[in-house]
Image (cartoon, rainbow, N blue to C red):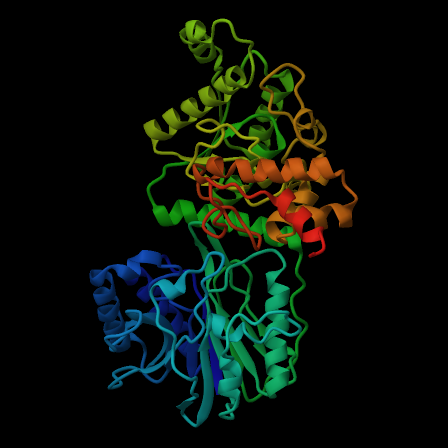
Length: 562
């Protein structure tokens, strides 16, 4: 049998557009000689549909779309699609997350329901879906297919200290002697996850001595990016076919003649770059309401990398860079911004903010009388820039891209209603040290300095007071980012961080306090493109109002019981 894996880029809620994509790729699969074509999890609705699933009209429209799809797909080929189906039982969650095997004008679809429903990080499937019953193979044209959905393959991680679920659907399917294990997924991208996913599939194939096929969604929906990278493995765990990363693809494999191939070589920074470009492009194009992307250019590394990524995602004719110097701004902030715009070939404007800053200073003079100038006055500059950019966005229908990185967002080194303004935060899940790696990668790939070398070399500064540098307020970014990675992504506490890094205890505690105390800023920031296992936003739910004393807790933990 010849199997096709169609890794498509659906848009959440666009039932007509998603159906058209499914039909188009089914026609391509049929022309390639495929007997069966598999599409990703919930490809009919796009993933994640979130609380669209609570709308009865939406669910009704989904059922109509399934019926229309079954009568529209080409004859002679089986089509596996992911879609929500109503739960007919009066008890339990109202829906099932299903894989449906459709054939042209068949009396009914073959249905298999997802058993393991993730409710961690960005996932909240238990909110809407009922777990499926014990996994059963699908018998189709003489082949026994162990059809399952995304998370169903993630409870057999080797050497994992904790199993999240009591069931292992892959083993349930393997007990029924399948000829093929087939997983349809909407598996989000994060740096390093592809290797873990690969090990998981290779392990399942070799453990059960059966070929394993995996089709994954590609594209971005709001914060979440999907990398595609669909795969077919032999029963001995060797890669026999691989889909493209970060773009749509159709993978066709003759299951009767699988031959090992060298798996694609991954590059973490290249993957990070491609994920961010895709995240910008899909946010812009799928919303369909913006004329251009707008970036405030400071002459610094973050705005430069954001602008370069946006230019690659959308093309230079759809990007506007604006520099907004104040009396504090260095000459380099203006000239580096201008050079960046010239290198990228984008439209460029200079709008000085001194008149706005002077107006606010005059307006607040009486209220501020008798106080020393400080952060409030400094932030008037950032907020004047935010107002300027939002005015341009409102006037001309531009998508404002926020440029703050994860290091700054983590410790609150940002100005609310200033540099946090925007529709999407491109670098909010990218640590400062990674931003520099991205800049080097962008220049290396271009073979020229698209990002001016002076922007890369100069010390980072918010430029809100004379001769300011980030290290006036923060540790060196190599130190800060190590602490942030351990605390946010690896969920280590202060004692472990101090013991394993040798960093000054007061410094570590200070950074952790800054992270916790600035949750209120992150809640008011734009949605960010998720590229790590633990991004700020929907996948990290920390209370704003709390009084967790980690130092007292750690002290108590070290004190022996009486």
